[in-house]
Image 1 (cartoon, rainbow, N blue to C red):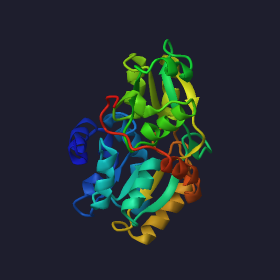
Image 2 (spheres, helix red, strand yellow; image 1 turned 120 degrees about the horizontal axis):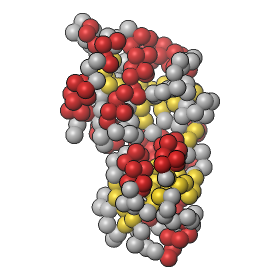
Image 3 (spheres, helix red, strand yellow; image 1 turned 120 degrees about the vertical axis):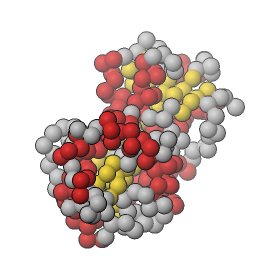
Image 4 (cartoon, helix red, strand yellow; image 1 turned 45 degrees about the vertical axis):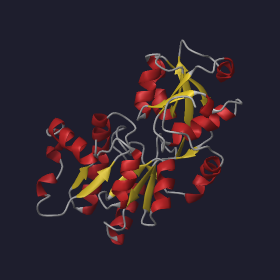
Length: 287
């Protein structure tokens, strides 16, 4: 489902929430579009984007509309085609977008916790499932739950973590489920024996029966990127300063723990891991 279709549905669902936003003036000023990363379900992604949407609106004095996409590839295509003015990107998606266009303006990195500008990918399992990744060596019929091909915690970091235990993801059965939240839920339903997802998502499900087995090294945090083909340099610099000085009032939504300066060098380790990775087929069946 394309972003505009998802947005149309959620506009109806969330219309009471949107009264405080300035979309009523969209006919007077051309609106800007913000695309959050589909880490959770569409309604939650939409709701979590609203504080940042409001901040951008207040800073630039222009209406901003969330635009949702289910697929990371569609986000990249939408950005390149000029459908998106601002976007939230995970590190792997940012690297892929940077390969397709030079027109990116990284505004700031998102703190997932107070003062924390990095995050981790994890391998997780149901609490009543395997207790150690080495158990996979004796059971190649195990099924692995992945997020998306372009997700950092999808096949890239899952493969990397498995290799540390002498295992190859390509030799196991795997499925792409679409989001970190769907991976967590599928594991708790015991539909898969192991899955790869972000630590800040896995943490929300620990008390419900999700067990973390392996944690990656620190990875660069998600980034808010502006499209310099759609937004003026002055507006981008103004918003960047506001984000870096932002002191959130509530602990919820994108930017709930503030923002940090973007660092290109933080991607060096991820680039090395990517260079050593295998390109996996989109099929979930073991070759």
